Length: 494
Image (cartoon, rainbow, N blue to C red; front, side, top):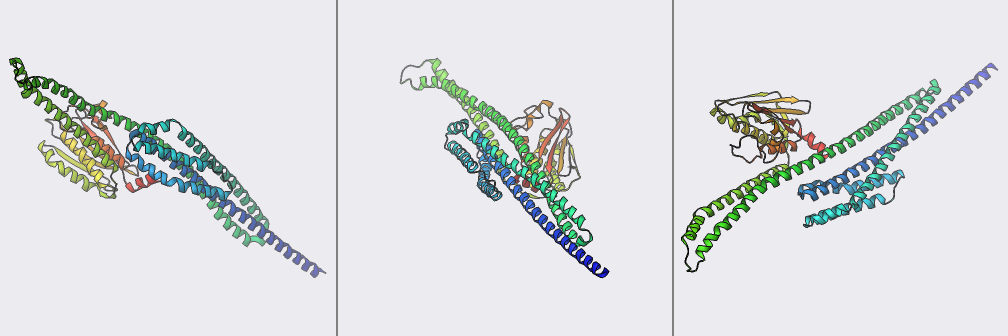
């Protein structure tokens, strides 16, 4: 009887253990399947969010390119416009596909609005390219494109917010599933150790994947906000630069035109006594008329013509300076390893004879030897600063020129060029980087494009130029250069 009871107990324990293992296995399998589906839903929601954010970014780039071209008629704005235009349809198609897969399709309103917004942008640019700039701007002023863009932004924001909300729900479900699995694992005891081990392994993998998904989502949010903020800052800076540039160019080009117009009037005035003398047709001409005609031919006409030639040469120099900066802004950058010590020594050698003529001296300190950058941009920028240091040395004072290269954080290097020359007035520290703007006595040849050119070169490679100076004591120009231009270009593409 005891044996039978023992056998029955063993059987029941075996059956209970088998049932328990079966229940644990079934429950664990169910939870694992649910967790996998939840994780897949998170992945799909991330894809939906990414496509919505990228579509919004592309449409904003199109809007920026359209407005920039209508304002400035600069074809350079059509390059980012074209690149963004090529991204819109793939992102829209991908977004519709992911929405359909998730069962959250929003109808055709978004695609219709995007199509209409692209039609409006294309129409305004076509009008501007055909010379009807005001017609293109009138289309913008009607506000249809802005209204469509506002609605698109609202729809895409709804998609992004909805995706975020569903992600939060899915993550909460995932956490609850994990808690149930842990409870079942504890209840199983010794009989379910192997099952628990397998479940824990799966659980850890899913937790790690879930954490990665959460981290990716946070990073995506942060990156999107940073990109929007940075592009807003860049757009404001670009608008200010365009306004300042337009003012400077129109002001400096107007001066030669005013001179030409003034001396054209002089030509007309000088032509009258000549006409009175030449067109007399045999009629008697007074001594006064003859004297005025000779004065006009010998003095007034040559003087006016010379001033007109001088003004046209001035205009030609200004236009060539503008074209030079424009070409440098469009030149393709070539990231290559650069030996900074060799580059700086080569640049110093090119002005060494001029330094020697002033009984001056130059010294070099290099604490960062190699970077990856565009060599031509660095050579032109450094060469310009060294030429300025020699050109604007203080008369009667031996030139002391110092170039130092030092690290500036983890991703930047600073190249400082210090001289003991004339220096720059404090109120001119900002304006010397503007096109055609110079400081101090204008006793040296030049058009005032050197420092503007350097600033353009630095911005092209992701750097900047700054100035410290005291008038009469000298100046220090610092080139802030990224250590790896490839990283800068990759961030721009992203």
